[in-house]
Image (cartoon, rainbow, N blue to C red; front, side, top):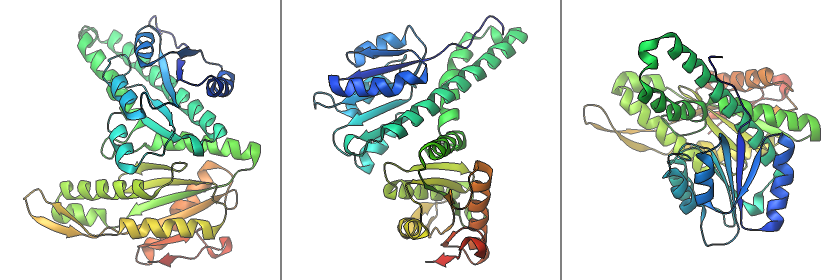
Amino acid sequence: MHGLELTAPSVLIVSDGEEQLAVLQRHVQPLGVPVQVLADCTAVIECAMQVDVALILLDLQRPMLDGLEALRRLRGAPSTAHVPVIIIVERHLGLHERQRGQSQGPVCFLSRQELDFDALEEQIRLLLTLHLRANGLQMQIHAFFDDHARLAADNALMQALRPSLQRHLLLDLLTGLPNRMFFDLHLLGLMRRGARVGNSFALVWIDLDHLKRVNDRYQRAAGDQMLLAVARRLESVVRVSDVLARIEGDTFGLILDGVSQPQGAQAALAKVLAVAGEPFECVTSEGESVTLIPTLSVGVALYPRHAEDQLSLFSVAEQSAQEVLRQGGDGVQIGWNAGDGGKASHR
């Protein structure tokens, strides 16, 4: 296609422990992509100038370079500024530290004590898929520019598009959360693992109630502030093993890994409703300060209890959330009808 080819992207690994490095290599090499083991972040930056890099995996056992400092150095170099990074750290990072890291681009911090190598392998596989899709999209853009010589002559525009494309493919630009594409691929990976080893999880559809009313009354800026506030609050209560994403305008998606029973989902989501529903102050476009109280309509589909395919899982979860909203919102329903054992519980 116009002289360009899709090639296998590389995974770069930095590990300061030989035993852990051997374990990481065993899980990455079967994915069939080039793996390069490097000594430090400086070597990663130099290597990324020579090869196409899909992912940087940092395993930091000693405190000589913590995860945030490593990330700062990588984001400061043009060759690694927008490459997704997975950092395995000794200690669990708090919400503030994780938000600092995520503000610098796509990054995932994993605590060594909670590390699930099967889940890590699926996450790497999904990031590789996303990277190949990004490369394919860039090939289409190159082809478009080749067909439109005036645009093709502007090389600066091509360079400017690359980071934007990667952010669009991985992240929601308003909240900084993973977006629908990442969420769908992660869900597909979990279902493949479920079919193989029999794991369970809960797919959660979270609608922010009455966002349109807020936008109509106070303008879009107030609605965006409420979306951001709810996103940060949801982040504060989800586990490291869970995946939170913004699915569409007023909808978030959440995957509760390892949750197989309604009682487990109810317990986790009662906390979500309580935290999200705290009042917060926002400023309208006219400069007026108003107090808003967010509420959520939450629907849950349990895998494999309610469905075993992606489309059906989403359907059950979304219809469950719609039923909660029909009953006034601010609640949770597991399964969308009585035959599933589903019944809305409101805060």
